[in-house]
Length: 178
Image (cartoon, rainbow, N blue to C red; front, side, top):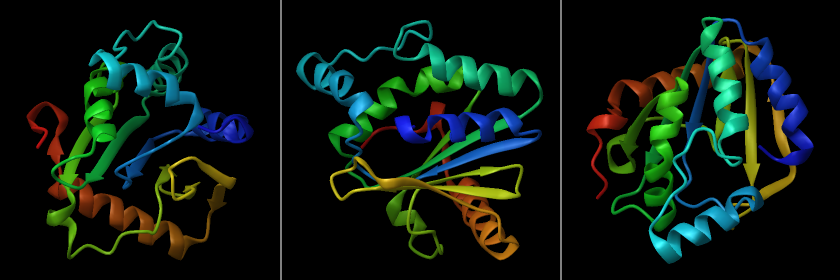
């Protein structure tokens, strides 16, 4: 999450009682906090997959605390195939998300053509609020990076979109990079 939105995001995550679901739809992200790790992976093919590393520990802690209090954490990724280098990098680190307690699925974009999806990535908390993630064209955080919406119609559209993706998507352990 972006530094300016970290507190708000963490507060929403900590307040979640039942569910926190994430819909990702970009093929490339260029957020600053991942740049060094991504560049290292591009140069060496090695991805930090240590849940205790400085890179992963804050996320693993946040997810582990949520799942230990009964929050279901799901992440669905809509991706173009063949996938970009960034998606290969993301896939290489997803074992940490899963180990922390997330359920992750992948949906090839070609299988999503008849779904009505939101225009940007988002998090849905307890089916009652949506936190939209805004990015620039290059994939860095936009200004402002986050937008919280709680209108029932907006939330319902996003919940329906996420569930439609989820129902078609392939579980991480079965998804093969193409």
